[in-house]
Image 1 (tube, rainbow, N blue to C red):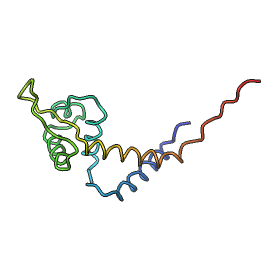
Image 2: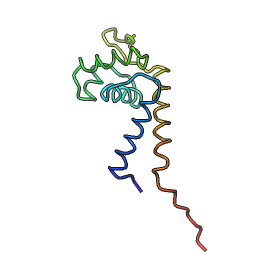
Image 3: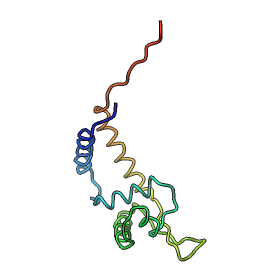
Image 4: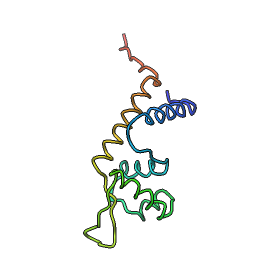
Length: 123
């Protein structure tokens, strides 16, 4: 049984409120969406590619990456095969932060899930 739209919004609210209590930098929704995209989609990532994938301008992506870089959630590195490109790389700190956020969401979501249906063998 899937969660209703109301339950999903309540879950999102609970996760965000719980996340506010953690000791880490606050990110805007745009910055968090960009961070999730970098970590949950296969690399390589470039400003141009992120701009196209998220339908945001390159300056918007650049500003968000600047902030994420200040927190060491992502890193820029010159592409060795094409020196004109700058690749956006994941960091350990960013990975840990997202893992903790995912664990928090799973913990909050667990009581909202219906209990599993026990299958009884036929007699």
